[in-house]
Length: 128
Image (cartoon, one colour):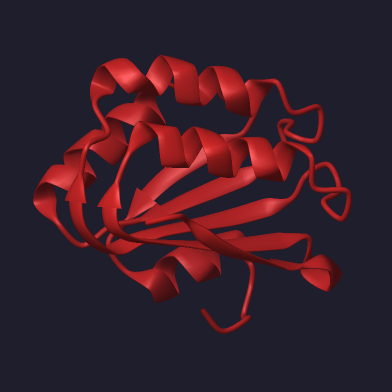
């Protein structure tokens, strides 16, 4: 199922929600959409909510392509923050691996298991 997202321009914030089966292709498509989103400014904050997926086909091997698409975006820089919110152990393990593999000079990534904690870290109070 496609990843749905909403941009809160006033807070330079993106809330994205994945449901159903999450695939690497869907993540790359989502990242490409953000790359071409004219309303996003450098240093934006992003919450990627995967608590509602039923299955993940994302593998550690697919991270390279996902990260390649992410760093292609000139709006992503040291000020960017990406919070990944998970609810399952296997999703947490994969997301932590992504967190550890990204380059901190492009953006800071942290994995959370509670939405409220992720929102505090991002400094946002918009509803999900």
